[in-house]
Image (cartoon, rainbow over all chains, first blue to last red; front, top):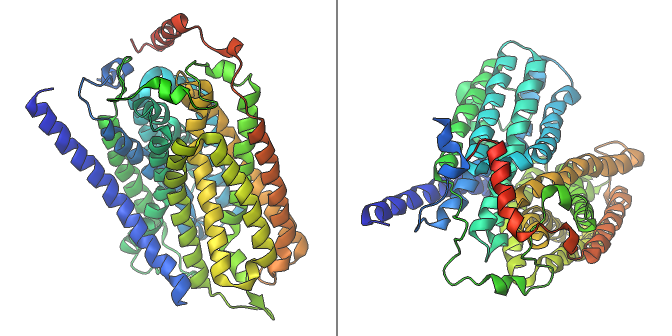
Length: 41
Length: 470
């Protein structure tokens, strides 16, 4: 694998994991806010 | 152009990172997991169509039944055509489901919602659910539980993303809609735009998966991986069994019973979670748990359901598939009994017991593909998984029937107490006991069902040629 394609793959890895981490992070954060009501109400 | 989706064009070049495959799988599962967030706009749909709860609830039921059927029927097609084409087809069906559904909402034709979200969307669900499974197992022969746990965790996470997102989108499209007010409903046009936005948005995200997914070359192995080290574990085979032969084996049906029992027990709690916590702490007709706190409890269960998929499935790589199901089912029996006997003594204890039970429920889903790999090999594991998912459809009917049947006999909703749940909870202990025994009886698949090693690759070629993929 050439350096160019290795760099391209690294970029693709970062973007892919960032997209799913952002989606999951949004879901977890929103759910935690809802779940906190169990202890505050 | 579509030939780019064929299996032969998706074989990874040397040096391709296998860590690109889990996010590709997650991109699909995070989108199709939306199916568990339909309750967010259920009341708005009821108001828009001026119809009953049942008429709208049927949409979800059709989607789940189609998930099981399409996974069972299309499993072999998915194996033959590869994950990229399967993910693309899944994205098309899933997005088309939303778009046809939006047309149904815009024209007030409920049958179009059944056809769109229920039928077309359900097919997208089934194909999407199984599409990355066998590919992940082939890329991670050393850690199949971790790999499938990551993907199937996405299905649990999908609802956690879709629920708040749908509420926020509905508020955006209809400023008069107040998500904090249970009696507030969104307008028909807001529902139409929600469906269009979700359909197009999910299609784009699923294309990330389509673009990144690859199958490993036939002789590829992770660095330092020795197949003999995996085969040395109990129940793990290096042989392969076709999907057609797998359903003829006793182990397949024992595993079907295991999954059915684990899901039936979990769905019983999941479906009843919000009223259940209020009923458990009801005294003189008034519950100590508010509606908002009960909503928080449901959120907490979703988190444990999702986390259990990754944590327990990864743990199964270390302790083995049969032992981990003994934990899900055996410890689950103890936890259900404790919930029935002492769950009402403290809210913290009730929440803790329910959260661990739900983590086992999620773990059961996520570990089953690796269990199938151990028993039947990698040859058609995706297709076998598809056939096994009919247990999910059956449990989706049985679990709520058991719980609601017992509760209906105990009194009216809003008047029940912890004692009313005991018969249902002890029934679940019995259901888990059946699953526990079935798991104990799982044995390696007899050699007569194995594919001859030389013919196996020929068979794969033939299957692919029949499907026009080579």
